[in-house]
Structure formats: structure tokens, C-alpha cells
Length: 93
Image (cartoon, rainbow, N blue to C red; front, side, top):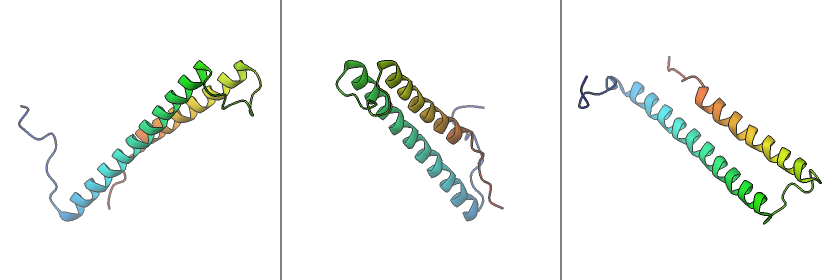
């Protein structure tokens, strides 16, 4: 197979094309949400590490507790990413 050949066959019907378009839109939305949450988490971690903010102070009073709360947030973002990437494709039918 060369680079000029399509990897998949083109849609043969309007319904199939609409289904594939909706599937692609859902995938891009999932990628966008995970990317935004990941970037937010990185920014929050950097600000927490430098002492610029102390956002977890109401939840945990010690530094270890605050980093544990940050770890829980990181696990939530990872769980959302895994869930969104492993969701099966909905088939029309």
C-alpha cells in the first residue's frame, strides 16, 4: 500500500458519511476536553509547586495532603482520558 492510497474505503451512503462525521466530531471533542483538563492540571501543579497558590488548603492542611489531593485530580483526568479513548465506536444500525 502506498501513501497515496486511502486507508479506508470512502463512505458509500449519506447515512454512513453522517455517522462517520459525527464519530469524528465526538473524538475531537474528547481529545479537546482531555487536553484542556491536562493543561489546567499542569498549570495548577506548577503554581502549587512554586507556592503561588494554595488551592488545596481547605481540603488538606499539610503539604503532603495537598499533593495527595493533586494526585487524586491527576487520577481523575487520567480516568477521563482512558474512558474517552476506550469507548467503543457506536455503529449505526
